[in-house]
Length: 444
Image (cartoon, rainbow, N blue to C red; front, side, top):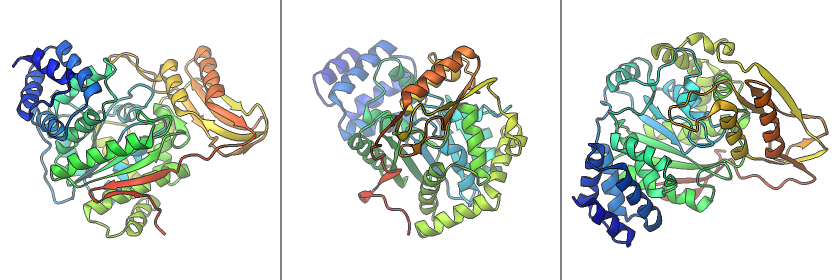
């Protein structure tokens, strides 16, 4: 294989054959192609794009580079994936909630990336919780508890793991076809019966524009459906943080509160909407109204919280965190920040807050970096709120005085109070399925 020639051809806008992509991905996963050549090819793809046949070949080659989770047991198996945001702790609530409704949920997640948080870091805020499980161990836990919460290992789509890490450091993350291939190849490796996607839009999303979000959603739906995995995507708002808490331990605490029926309304709404799609794909509900009622009953009865307790214990964590969130890391320095004037909250910029959490030590600037799981913000202000001077807007949770000052400065930049507030994005705007794109409508 002449990789230099492949780079030249893609650079010049040619379409590479499926067998060429398959051979390249296989060789890269085996270490026979150096990073610098793949980086050059990725940049060519960034500017030239991919045809559907090329994307299909890459997706299948990534999937074939590793193993699959065996599909054992009688429960339908459904997963959910989010494209990432600030305050997005939905997975921690959704996985045990849907499992409590009779669906197997093998949820594979990632760590924080850029300004966005990562589900694995939030889970590891629970003392002892292990996310680095082998496929065999993950399967045993899934059969026992109905849910397992893991990270990607060398067993699943290792070619994607290498290529994703390379994209992260070569400014080629925002390639819509490769985002789709990365997500779908990992999810198909879980041997799913269905997949639900949460595609973020707005200023805090990796792809802020609605058209880019719809393009990504349609691409992933096509890839999933073509591989025998019914797939549905919802476009949800990320022009403000989801929920109140932003930061790993703080978000885990809020997720537990939500499982106990005490969550923020926006977090509950998005969780129920995604969960309803999962129950519909699993065919354990026949309408969205029935699905939402089933999910609400699992919350109200405590079944969802008990399922979370069971999976925490199964994965080595301290299950008492479900009863006492003080078990989580607590930041030693805190300060409440109030409004500096009367008015209305015009914006709560999630990207500013996400970057501040990284700067405060709660996110990574290097892959191998240890992070402070306790730092972050609890932002109770929402766009459109009317406030008076001095009303509390948010609380900073920091490791020291320097972090506290950094957090206060970020809040001053992120939360704008003006005379008038523009309309925020709808919490859920579109639903994308094999049937096409439709405006999302709440159940009556």
